[in-house]
Amino acid sequence: MSKRTCDVPGCERAHCAKGYCHAHWREWRQKGVAGAPFPALVVRVCTFEGCEKPRLSRDLCQGHMLQKKRGKELTPLRYHHRSTERDERGRKRCSTCAQWRNVSEFYPKARQSDGLSGYCRRCDRDMRLRRNYGISADHYDSMLAAQGGGCAICRVAPGEGTSLAVDHDHACCPGRKKSCGECLRGLLCEDCNRVLGMFRDDPARFESAIGYLARGRS
Image (cartoon, rainbow, N blue to C red; front, side, top):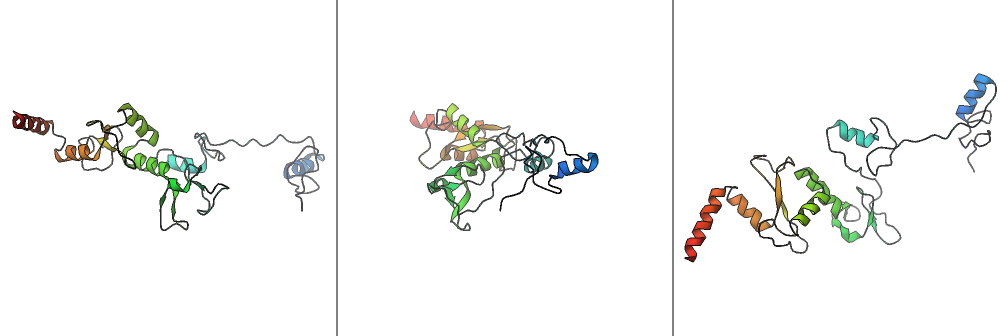
């Protein structure tokens, strides 16, 4: 059964009463006649880049407005859909970026009905970087490119399936595993990052170690 619309020519709004939509019916009650079609309703969308949800307040949709109200950084909203949903190519949709990706791009997760995480590996990495270091995956990639693709100290590139650790000045954020985002120093391999931690970022210890090695070679 087709949905009945307003009898005013050109008006596609749903029928309400007397053959008119609600707006034209109200005009008919007030003036005794229903005039020309009303202009189409313009839906203003959220100003966050890539978000197409209707704008609610402060130029943002409800989800992004709540993020701002809680003092959080604005990030893409998660899309809710069935975890078992697949497209014609057998790909799974990420609940964060809403992109269809191969199932190999999702981490295993036993609690999910399809055994896979709801968001893709890149979004997972992006969320962890934002949560722990205040940077995005794109920022991480730009830092890695600036270092020539390898560790900032030994220059060795990470192996397949591994990544470099984000190093930050612990004097800026003492006793915290998370960084404020302003004290990042570079990306390090596991060995170099461990040495910095064992030497407690003390330059005097490194100078002493260099002198010790030099004496051993003489």
